[in-house]
Amino acid sequence: MRNKPVYKRVVLKLSGEALQGRQAHGIDASILDSLAEQIAEIRRMGVEVAVVLGGGNIFRGQSGTTRYKIERAVGDYMGMLATVINGLAFQDALEKKDVATRVMTAIEMHQIAEPYIRRRAIRHLEQGRVIIFVAGTGNPYFTTDTAAALRAMEINADAILKATKVDGVYSDDPMKNKKAKKFASLKYMDVLNKKLKVMDATAVSLCMDNYLPIVVFDQTKSGNIKKIILGEKIGTVVN
Picture 1 (cartoon, rainbow, N blue to C red):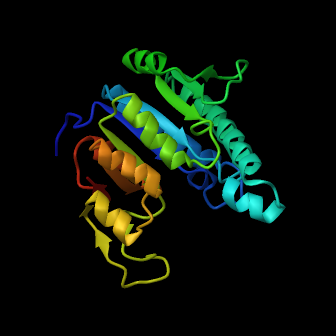
Picture 2 (cartoon, rainbow, N blue to C red):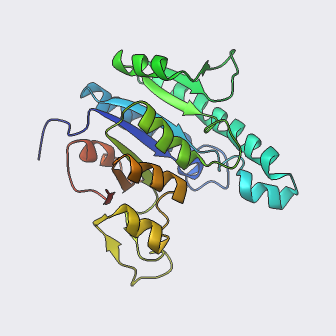
Picture 3 (cartoon, rainbow, N blue to C red):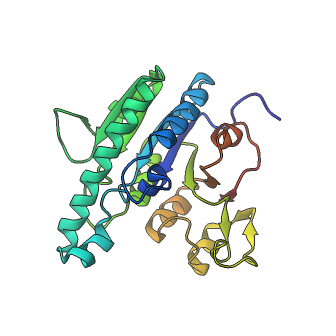
């Protein structure tokens, strides 16, 4: 096993559901603590880290609009605000691990987060701070997956680490179909053509156009983030 990172700068994409654990909604403190410790560990290795958070554990824009009969754009803005709540909680968890952190938001709210400015974000990374990007892209109709791809491109990240509840990408839902095949690697077009649930099509297309690899892995197993950083074959690589 390597002892030096194969990635210098990464974007870690975490869904809101990843933070809620087995709870019906909200944030599981033990998961928050575990993820914060794993990020602290790779920061000590010199890896520059940015995090993009979803908000589905609090409010999911698209499904929420149907359930509550809210206009789609309004629901998406509500979902963006949910990511800010998650971001502040994650910042607190990281700072308890003595990790210097900045929350940067696509929707300005000066009292609690910095507005997103690309050059400032890159400077924070160079100074060893972990950035937490919240509020998605700041625009309705775009997912936090797309936000992760966009921010990764803007800050010149080496890869997107996409955290899920399963150990990679499968041909079908492995929870429902025991015969589902796991892919060790995939091409971008395979993901798009087969409509595999890696990231949404806009995010995958962005990564394809800019040759940015996506590593899909099981975030429920502590230590997986470090293993990916050290080059171990964890999960599924899309490139």
